Image 1: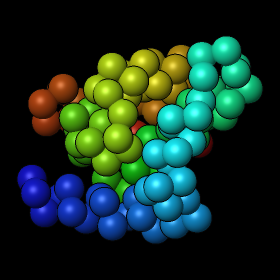
Image 2: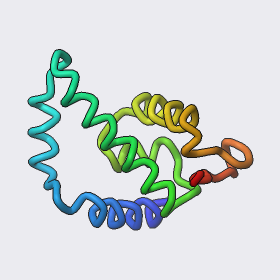
Image 3: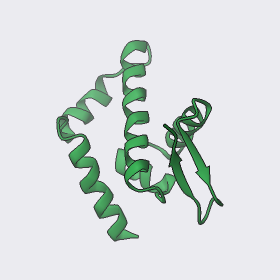
Length: 104
C-alpha cells in the first residue's frame, strides 16, 4: 500500500507541478467562505485532480485520495458524488475490491 501511495504522489506532483506546496497552503489559508468564485475554482481543481488520479490508479481508495490531495475524506466523498451525478466516473465491482471507471 505504501508503494502505491508513493507512486501516486509522484503522479500528482507531475500533474500539479505548477503549484508549489507553499502556494497551495497559502491559497487555502486565504480562501474565505464569502468568496464563492475562489471556492468554486478550488473545488473544480480538486474534482479534476480526483479524475486524473483515478485514471492513473483505478483501484485508489478515498483515504489515499484524501491524503494525496490534503483534504478530508468527506470532501473526497462529496466530489465523488458530484462526479457520479455528472456521469464522469463510475464504480465497478465492490467497495473493497472494485475499481473506478472514467467515463468519456
